[in-house]
Amino acid sequence: MKIIKLKGREIYDSRTIPTIECQIFLEDGSSFCSSVPEGLTRSSHEAHEMRDGGKRLEGNGVRKAIKVIEEIIAPSLIGLEPNVIEMDQLMIGLDGTDNKEKLGANTMLATSIAILRAQASMFQQEPYELIANLCGAETVTLPFPLINMISGGAHADNNLMFQEFLILPVGTQTFAQAMEHAILFHQRLKKLLIKEGCALVKSDEGAFAPELKDDYQALDLLVKAIDSFKGDCIFKIAIDCAASQFFNRKNHTYKMSDQSATTNDMIEWYAQLVEDYPIYSLEDPLDQDDWAGWAKLMEVMGDQVQIVGDDLFATDPARIWHGIEHGAASAAIIKPNQIGTVTESLQSIQLCQEYGMNVMVSHRSGETCDSFIADLAVGTSSGQIKAGCCINGERLAKYNRLLSIEDQLALSMLDV
Ligand code: PGA
Ligand code: ZN
Image (cartoon, rainbow, N blue to C red; front, side, top):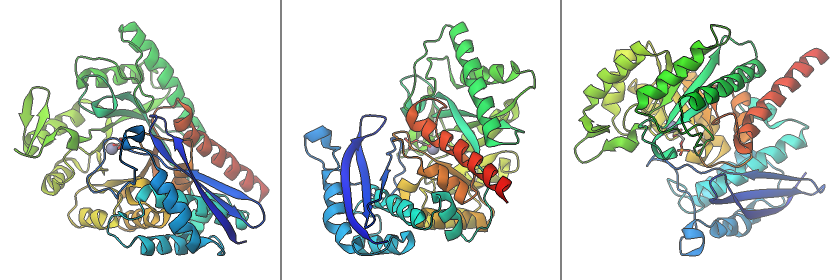
């Protein structure tokens, strides 16, 4: 089934920033769409995102990227059958730069996901099934969700230093049950915030963004909500510190409230935090280039808590490999738009899995209703996913897609 046309269009994401929708048409009249997110607190090691610049939409327009899809990428794909691995290679060749400067990672990823969907449909497969085939996997598992409940940092207009305070339901048998617990938790936390007199302000990812005394108060609120279940539902806490945001590159210190802290101070402080709270996971606890600090932190608490690299790795296999060699983290965040193609996202995940590093597939703070990352998490059996709070269409698109996949898998097991 050959590709006959590629169309790009400018749409808007959950933060009102323009983004790309790509539609691929096949000769039988079917068509397949995809759209891509954008991050706010980006790693400086992410692949290039193509934007128009200039005055229109404050420079954020994506008309140039759409021209790239229709005038540069389309002529190379039209007349061929959709094949994501081959076509990603073709785009990487057309781009020819180290960081996707010429075509743009956003342009390439939108095209890559649409190709994956078209290819899957040719074989009457779901995207996660094709991903599992591409990875050589015979079985798949659902990930467990890490759900953002309280936001701070650059994602919220409050005084919290950390960017995300997440919870993960533990001990549940199914994804659906984990979501049930998360939804109950969200309702419980909302009541607690009202009781504490906090305004119910929301962040970019839909989490609560209350004005609190400090980050300890956010953690105390989560613990209070957890305790209110009296053991009926068990939750752990995860934090995305996004430490590159409060790292001062000039004097190599971290700004914590009014104080400045060295890497060693930070490590000591995290060690205490992990003692005091039921923390399962710490994401980006240190700056994206503080490799030695990460290795030390792993030595001190790597066996007690999952240490996750997001800005550190930027979904780049070369940086992940460096992290594996230097024992810098025990998990990697996978954000396809940090690297720019489905194929390279799969390479990063497989590299982690081969060397015992955990994988957490992730959305971005500026999202669309595209649910590709849900299929990616299942197809690769990534184990973990974070897609923001359990409200708002663009976040629920991912969680609801996972519910639907779990249901499909249960049905297919009954069929056997
Ligand atoms: P971003 O934030 O999408 O704004 O980069 C998410 C994260 O840091 O995990
Ligand atoms: Zn992060």
